[in-house]
Image (cartoon, rainbow, N blue to C red; front, side, top):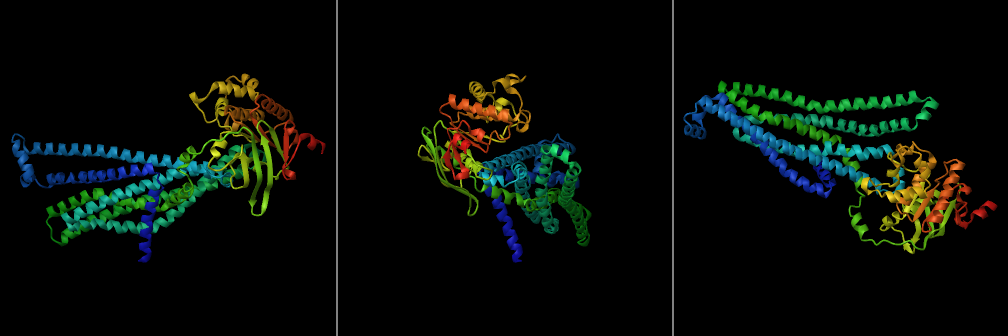
Length: 593
């Protein structure tokens, strides 16, 4: 008994958790929808009530004389015969049903729009949670799982938790009101409520199994996406290693499991309707038996069955929807748990806080003071690194693999924040509260630069579309990044598509587009993280010359370059050697050594 009480309590707690997860704007909408649900319930009951006059007409030839209201109306229009009056009454009944269904359809549209509002908002918040996440936490997660969390998880949450919640509340209201009415009209009709314990027994048996199925489906879906992605991006490797058959076998294995799980889920969801339908037939038989036992006349039994049919017309679907809603709520509870985990760290007041933080200038120097960072406890990858970068300098950072070059770059970028030490810009300390101003000053070109599947102009003016793009700035960026000759050779010029991740252009042109992007954004600081390490020597030399020219023509731009090849840093004004504890040196000294 105590266990059942706890389960009921937990169920209502889960309902509250669903509501708490919704953004405030949607919570307000839900308050309006609650009123709409009540209106919809009343309309449903009104629709059922309209069948009672129809039943009277069928069972009683003298129904007009029997009911004073109808008799008075008929007397007011004596030229109308009984049959004509019946047709008029039925026409009014049909008109009211049509009107009721039109209103119900509009209410359903409002409910559906709200559900898609929830899905859209939750999806955007989930993406926001990843964008606001620490880089280290982001790297620990599988990209296919992130895509699933952003696109599929909010859809499942909306369709299988929020929608069942609305359905559950709506149908419970209907069952309570109709059940109470039946009890008042004829206590025997309450026998239809026998459907409730039968539905509950089925729910108790199946809900645990369904929960397991849905949880496994949520695990398999990202795996299937991952295998597909691996097949696309690993196409050449799969061909050369002749592992196509093993890849297909793995894919088919998970697809087979996915198919079986989905089959089981849909079967369990459809079963309640059949059980409740069988129960309804059982109730009809019981009602006939009750009529025979109590020696009711045939007309009374037919009238009794008519009332039952009217009640069953609405109650049986309600029982089915309640059962399916409960099953769905239990099966997809994992979506609620996952979303709570993802959304708990979102700072909804971030923009307001940022608006109150004053911008800072970069006119003098960037100072890194005693920077310390470790991935594992007591195993520092960067220990006590300090150096200064003056405005307009081109500073190189060198070191062998594992010396912490890219980690230091990510600390300077501001995407790794859990380090010890300080980064000062003109004596202004970079903190989490002013980091957004720091981001605006930085352009970043990495070894595998990100290019979206769009045009050259869209990738240079990253984040801008249509009329937002400044063509003068684009052309300036193209010229300074030495892209002019390349673009002039293309039939579509700057409107040329670069392909997914830039796979339709060369590595050197990708890096030049990255540099052009930084120039377009008016970046004061250009950070290059092994930007030329994957290029051939000739292309690397061209990029280095481009950067040297950029440094000469744009005296205000500060460049910090990370490299493991010394030749990449030949134009640097100074070099920080991480392999020797971050000491300051020069290209000439390193070449001499």
